[in-house]
Amino acid sequence: MLSKTMTDALNKHINAEIYSAYLYMAMSAQASFSGFPGMANWFAIQTKEELAHTEKLYAYVNSQGQHVVLEAIEQPQTKFTGPLDMFETTLSHEQTVTGLINKLADLAVEEKDHATQIILQWFISEQVEEEENARDILDRIKLAGNEGQGLFMIDKELSTRVFVPPAA
Ligand code: FEO
Image (cartoon, rainbow, N blue to C red; front, side):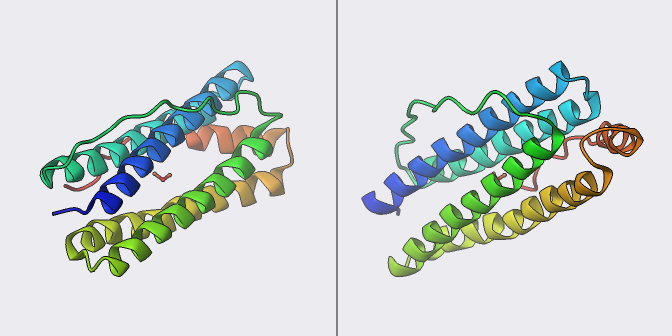
């Protein structure tokens, strides 16, 4: 059984995950518009991942017999100056989300809510991966510079990313 405080906090985080999907969709649109189809693909897959995170929390709140309350989604940043800007924004956004997840985990510990602690463990591990992926690509973009052959190769590689649904 979730407390009202925990339910409200999880509902707020459902909104944060949907916002993440929206932000990456905006980056996918920018990448397409700017002629980086591989990056557009990478961000489109990232959008799907964020929706999967949303669904995971949504299902959890439902399974605890609580009411999922959906709120308005804030407009994301829609213009980016290039791949460097997009991946810097991605890494910093993921670091922000990690902070939000850690606060949720702190609350679950405070409330002695063991079930929520277990589901949040998944999100804590996922954030390590999310930050690592963004950092790896960002490092390579920094090496390549904002244009040229190196960037073309990175874009080509990012076109191969496919969506793998998270384990139940
Ligand atoms: Fe849902 Fe990118 O964290």
